[in-house]
Image 1 (spheres, helix red, strand yellow):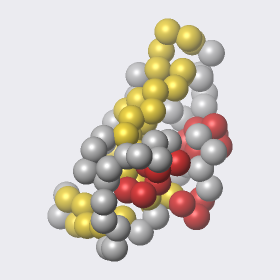
Image 2 (image 1 turned 30 degrees about the vertical axis):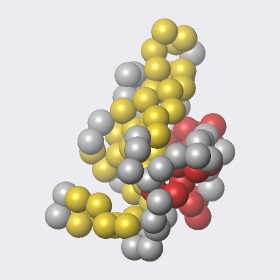
Image 3 (image 1 turned 30 degrees about the horizontal axis):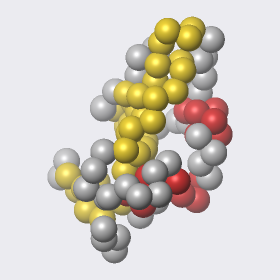
Length: 99
């Protein structure tokens, strides 16, 4: 593990309440974790204690994750969207959640 490197994780939608119960959907929720060499997306989800049923799309450095066995690069920015969020024309549409 390289302790000086971090992974920056942005959490979107209702999933953010697992990390900040008083969060507003309109505000950023960012989790910073130490970088672990050769950690996969799946291992990162486990480290965050996220279940597959809660997860929607995931991006690493603005690129959609196609395979959860992909490795997380150093100084990565990860975006995790809640289940039920849909990407439309580069924007987000939240089906039924409100602040």
